[in-house]
Length: 425
Image (cartoon, rainbow, N blue to C red; front, side, top):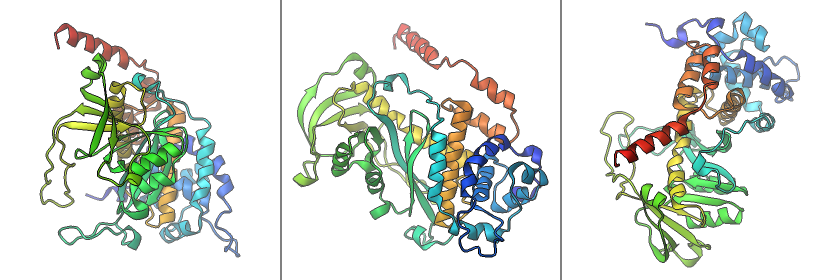
């Protein structure tokens, strides 16, 4: 059987022309960027063309490699609709070095003006500031790049990758601030240091336990924002006040709500310089274990004693909302899956840092375009439906019918809760 990239792709199988033509006008100012050294004036692959090709790749799961993208760019109808030409593999790989990825921020800002709020969960509507989920993910590449080289794995192999650090805007369900670094998660590429460099006022940052650094919390407060962060099971603290639990907190599994002094094992200058609130929530105990010796296997998550410890500087937000908010942090993990699986960012078209930044910018632009197109928060089914649409297996009518379907999620959940209460649970 031939590989997918060897199969001919027809124009009828391609999607996204209407959206790409709209964004092409915003990209037109990029046309002359990188042409300073082109004294002969014979450059054919320009910056705006390069970005359009990246977007065409992201919008079409059938295009699974640079070579397949090259073949698609040779189709006369694609050239006519998007105003692009066939490119050589060498020029595509080399040209990204002369383009300035930061110029794409202007396109992102322009598209962001038309963002449609998708709405928060009902429990989170009264939270202060912009609700921002923070995490990072590793994007694999086959290139042997010194900056992207991990330490040798246990079996002597090396892994080569980049790390994408992301702040996720919950209100619009699109990426916010982001940065590409080497994957080691140490020094400048440490998730805590990357967040520290990109702090801004008016946010509520929701973070996992790797961000449990007291000086980082101090920096978040100094920047005029708030935080909700899980801490390690062995955290050392002193209880100052035990706060009463209401019925909703108990139903949410909250064990205790306390004002504490945390970080007693640290030096005074390394502790939190503000009152901290510790909320403990019952969860399923977990024992760390290996995944076996198969290729690519790693370790499962750290051991948990069955208590989720969440620290925040928000004194007045009900405990059950804080518990739900940390659970809601998994939204960013779902988005990473969407980024890698649906938008095909698992495979990098370029292994140069400039090309990777351009591809991530293109993915952000793609998310903004989908937000403008749908104006709703994508559910698991919506993500699946968009994937089928981009593959040509669902029509625009199918997508529009789903978008216009009334959202009765809250009504159904409330009815289910009432049923459980009637049954005595």
